Image: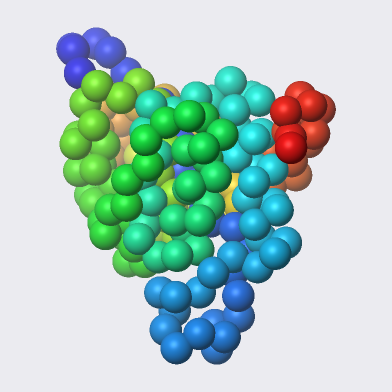
Length: 171
């Protein structure tokens, strides 16, 4: 990325998943039927709001991948799984990932709590804001470092659903 340019980083939490004891491991938990429907609406809502990622990067856990896949499909862009976005993600993990996509103007990173809250706080200095499922935070990133971005928008699930429904783009 050239000097003076900036990126838009969208942090997104996965949709509502099955109960913790429904699968042998946490990694295998899938979205519930309602979780799939709400994640699909959230994906359509992001696009309806003009957020068109060049790439979507997801935690490899199934529930997160399923959510990210809907965003990538709605935006017509590439999807990559990255273990750095798995539970336990740090701000440095996230920023290292951003550095790996220097030509992407808009990156959506789909991950888990509490890493999303901590990364948002570290990058923007906005304090700790919890993420509902599925929720997105839009950051204008001038430099991939702590304090290198500004919070542009916090998009709770109801806002994303409303944007999708009002645009008429929801299938």
